[in-house]
Structures are given as structure tokens and as C-alpha cells.
Image (tube, rainbow over the protein chains, first blue to last red):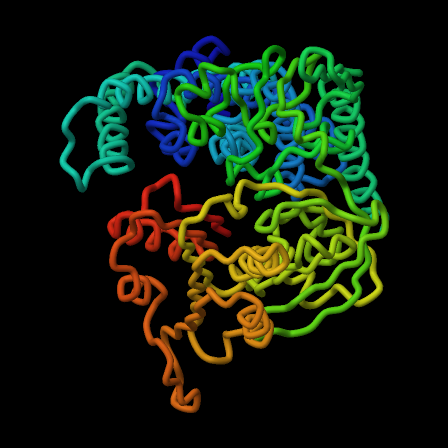
Length: 198
Length: 367
């Protein structure tokens, strides 16, 4: 019952800084590494993730506690969570294709791949393991999304700055990105003394 | 039992709800209404339903833009000048556009979608490109993996093309190909026999079109083509010609040689035809017959990897080795190359080194 002890705003804050889903749990790494070459694309993907995480954490909460639990179907939770996430990703794809063809092309395959972004399924599973209330779940989903976006934006900014830098040949591309991710995780550890939600 | 039914009901109910929700979203987000495509300042005005690519929308209206890859954005041929309504330049287009083209609003028509009224400029010749309904008249194996496909034109029943040009072959839906695609093939038949078209198709493992032609297509079936396209045709001059063909790259060269024989063009010419082994050579009799009619034509077959039983006493090595040997000075000579990109690139490099000027080297690569 640990989730009950914290208010929604605290969880929201913690999900962004102290328990950043990307930099402390290392979930959602693949698109983080692939789409972080430019700030603009990072921001686009970040917004997509925030939207999908917030909506699906709310919807998955409702489906879990008001459909699966009463009917005794909690063993279906993975498949149900994935279906809900997939539907939302499909919706986001339609919106992006309509509103920003460039972003649509830049994100390419990584947009549909949000469906299986482990950070998003991770949020749904954490909220159940930690017994969050509805409000806490939504706050956690939104916070995790913003935290993920913050991390990918920072990464995009750093990698843009690195474009002119002379990086040792073997470290170019994913190599240096992983080192940066590691350093960023170290930096985020400094927040961890403030609150702990795990 | 009730538990099973309950789970089925709950899951399908949830699925149906989400499907309904997406369907509603799509009918708003995926719907662009009727859009107008204005061509060459009103020379033609087309009404299309929005949402499709410019290339496919034009194709549906009977205007065929050259494209070798069938709209996958990998050949860069389907360039069109878009004056208005094309939307922002996409990252999938930039690798294929020169800076001047970007300035001149040239776009890849397979990448941009018709989302609103759109204003484009295209060469009027493109209006001449037609769609042909054809019937498979005959097929035969030229080598183990190269097939000759003879098509009789039904509607329209004749075609006008420059020997060396290519057509787009529509591969219909079949088992391994869920939606119809287009692939480019050079015309091997002669332009003075305009009621039919012959294509030469090498089997490519897993290739959608080649698998279809080699394994699914039967005599008597109907096929749709559109064309002709391409800048690969015989230029009018008195210069000596070098034709270089690798594998099925011989197809457009055969058409050019037939044209020379028909029009009694007596320019000095050399054909270098490369294959790996003797069993990879084809149209040998047809080439001999053309040689009878073209006294100034020299033919060299080159095998890069002849087998013991070939008892080959002709040229050995790649086509570039042969060209290296036979060309002393490239000044005032023309070359026509058709084959794999690797072969074409190697030949272009060698021929320029030999002194044939870049503008006189014409080629068609098939990827």
C-alpha cells in the first residue's frame, strides 16, 4: 500500500526527476537512442509519448480495476494493456500524419514502435504493482511521459552540440550516445535523495 | 465455461470499442475531401480524392510519371515541379534533389500527398505516356534464370517508343504481393514491330515482380503496362558506338541494334556482352542474324568465370577488361551501357579514363 502514502503532485514530480523512467529504470531506450539526434524530432516524439502515456495510464487503470478485476480476468492484463496502447499510438500516428508530414517522416518507424515502447507498458504495470489510485496513476503516467521527454530533449540538445565536436572514431554515433546517457543517469541520481517512490 | 465466454466477450468488446473509436478518428483525420490537381497552368485540371500520393493520384487519372521503384522513394525518377500545395520538403526527398532543384520547387511525386489543391508543372511529353492492356503471347527460358516474355498489345494496339526506352510492368496482387506494384523493364523488341513488346527478366530471389513473371504468370493472361519512359536511346551522330551489356541488360541494346538494321545505320559499332558462364549467354542466334545485316557491327562475348565444359576460347574476364583491351583512344566515340549498377559504374569510370566524354556515355542501371 505504499502508493497511498504519496499525493498525486508528489508522484508527478518524482516521476519526472527522482524516478525518471528512462534514466533510473532504463525503459524506452531504443527510440531514445535513435531519435535523439535533433531537438526538434526529440520534442515531437516526446509529445507523442507524453500523450500516449497519460491517456493509456488513465484508460488502463479504468479497464484494469473496472473490467478485469471484477470479472476475474487479471491474467489478461498484458494483452489488454497492449491493445489499449496500440489504439492510442494509432490515433497519434493519424494526428501527426495529418498535422506534420515532416515529423511523420522523421519519426518513421519509431512512431508505430511506441506501441511496444517498454516505458509505456512499464507505467501501466508500475501503477498496478504500486497500488496507485486513479489520480495517482494519471499523475504518474503524465510525469513519466514528461520525464522521458525531458531526458530525450536533453540528449537531443547535447547531441546537436556534439555535431561539430571531434569524437574519437570508435565512439561516434551510438557509442557516445550511450556514454552521455550514462552521465545523464548519474546526474539524475542527485535528485534521488528528495523523494523515493519505489 | 462461463469464464471462457466471459473473457472472450470482455476482450472482444474492448477490441470493438477501440476499433470503433479509431474508425471515427480516421474518418475525420484521414479524410481530405476532393482536391484539384492543376497541371501546366490549367492545361489539364483533375479532380481527385485527397490523401493519396501525387504519383498514384496522377496515375489513377492516366498521367504516368516515370518511376522505376514503384513509389518506394528509392529511385528518385518521379520528379515533378510543384508550384503550390506540395507542403514542406520531406527528409525522404532531400537525398534525391540537387540544390537547384530544391530552389525550383522540384519534388518527388511519390513522397508528397495530395492534401489540398495542388499546382504542378510537367513536360507535355508525359501526356503521351499511356497505359496498355496486353496479353502474354509466349514465354521461354533464355538461360537458367532469365526469361523472355512476349506481350501482345490489346488496347491501345500499337506503341511508339525509342529503342532503349523502358516500360513499367504492373505486377498484380498475388500470394507474395499483397498490393499491386510497378517495376521497370527495358523493351527488347524492335520499334518497327509496334504491336508487341518483348521483355527480358532475370529472376531475383524474393523479387516481387521477377517471382511473379517466373513462377505465377501463364500464357494468355492479361498484364497492364505503362510507358514508354527514359533517356536511354540511340543518339543521332556518326560516331563509333560501344554497346556494353551485362545479363538482361542486353534487352534495350537488342532493340537499338534492330533499329540500326532496320534504318540501315552503318556506323561502326561494337557490342560487348558479358556473362559469367556460357550458359548465361542468350540471344546468340539473334545477334548473329543482326550481324549479317550490320556489316560494321563487331560482337564480343566475354565470360568472367567460364566452366571447364564450356571449352571457351573467346574473351575471358569482365566487360571492363575487354573494353580496356579494345579501346585505344576514346575520342569521338559513344557508349551505351546497360547492366547492374556495379557494372555500369565500373564501365563509366574506365570509359572516361579512355577519353570518351561524359556526355557521350549513356546508361541504364537496374537496381
